Picture 1 (tube, rainbow, N blue to C red):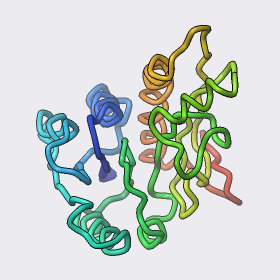
Picture 2: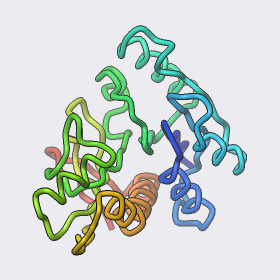
Picture 3: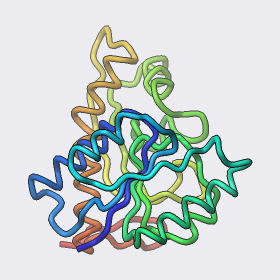
Length: 208
């Protein structure tokens, strides 16, 4: 059974999808053992506590810079004996020292089909605003391993979502979450915990 540590910064809807997948048996070979938040008082912490999952707050604002904050996160991950680290709406970019300590063991969900609408500054509603400005007919979500390159890690799973006439960024964001993010993030976590993901030359292969 692998230890899953989830990093959060806000409401925790992706965390909830992971909790639901664990409780329904989709994630059968892993268990969320700790949720770490970059801010106190966020709803994601309440979600975890309702399901008897241990929580920790490591507040970004209490650290002078990204490196010092990253060292604190790394120390916590080591203490929690994390096998898999999942970014679930975690809004802080960590120093590469964390990624180097957990290569191909950290995953993130991005609300677009990478390599479209990704990289530094592309998060939250901005992703969907840019997709609508470009007039794409399909968008979606991508789960990828985290590397030192923002949104540049090996792609694990992707799911497409149709853009509809009259979409607002908010409506598109909601559809992408419901139809893609909340489905493929738990699937990717389950595949990892079943030892079915193999990375070769920056490409993820899913083993039968």
